[in-house]
Image 1 (cartoon, chains in turn orange, yellow):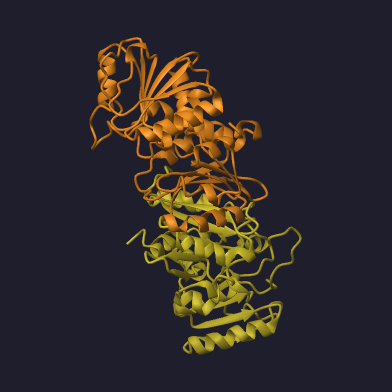
Image 2: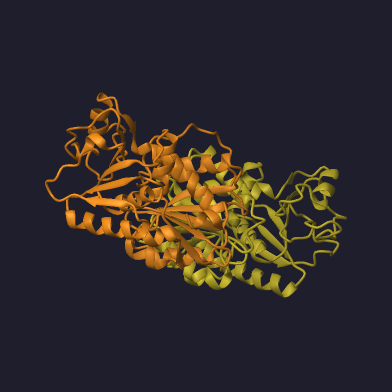
Length: 288
Length: 268
């Protein structure tokens, strides 16, 4: 999922940030950037972890991303970048190396500048999602998962789920061929049983322990249910990647049935935590 | 300070960068002026300056740059446009990124200094000033003083030829102002001087000699300094002991954030 760049702001910490020549700089590269609120959350979180760190947005057009990356290579007080719309896929050939996750997902949402100036691309969408689930008390061990949507975010989530000990994954997508391809890929990589549904085929929600919406259906401007929820019971945890509104049609319906609900915002804090680990936590977390 | 996507970003280009603390003062003053703007230092090697400036042209929320050692002169030929002050000083200390991605360089050292004097109630019109030091800062200050209607400017520099060259430039730019060059340690350097400015680095390190002989410093002379650290240089201490009004180096920096914000168009 993407960061909620225009989401709610965290509590004000006062004017504590002092930017000097010893400060590690971090930029969120996007276009547009005016709606970004994420720098506030980054600055508060990194300050709370004791880092001399400052985050700001950087408005760069798609064609100009390479020049920005070149500058970052040459600037040794820049610690890294967050890459957001519309740059995440274009960033892949612009970094010097990808983490395993970045390679598998084929998109980059965080970049770390190494001390030799080289750039390492990473993707923490999947990890962020998994940590959001864990924070909401969901244990993926043996889970029967139904997931709608296999785009960039869906791909990241499906791989992370498959790597976390689930029992079965059912994929649903508007273009069923795409779901089929991802199902084969995940099965080959992890051995997990993955089923891709054909067009018009309905999942058996009565046995699902986790239902994931990884499409943009339900967000402001596209208020609807991403799938028919006939058969859904209170035994299923329902997670949605949509950030606005916080309670989507899907989550509202699930809540009415008594389901445990995990909103898109549950993945926000974990992303910033994972970014901190990626930038400062040493190489062992970087492979993710 | 809360940074969001609306915040105007200003980058301070420097090499080295670790010692940079001036950004704290500028950020505090941006905040005090109610501006949604932030300045952060970035470490740019001299060989990468042109590429860095080109990258900045492509960064649409970067409002401008601060330029410090060692980039102030090297940046001049890389500008699309220079302000009057930058052109005649041959050095820039701030660059505005215009909405069409062009870059305009300016130099606020001189205007910062005279604004600092004005804030401290020092009159310049029809006055006589002695500036010791004819390097980059001395030149900026000398020209800005002349702009304020000085009657006579006296220049002193260890390398007298450099002072002579500056004197010739000033004679050409401002024929109304009398200019002469003196020997800093000469007995009569301070005679009739209303304002003494130290624009050398003497006084920064412990054990530095005074920049000029103070034997004939009278209490009616205002003494101003460009050195920020220490706050009280031996020159300012000696001047205070004689009852002179003194203006410290920080006074030259304090007006600059507002001047820069105006240059960037953040304050109308």
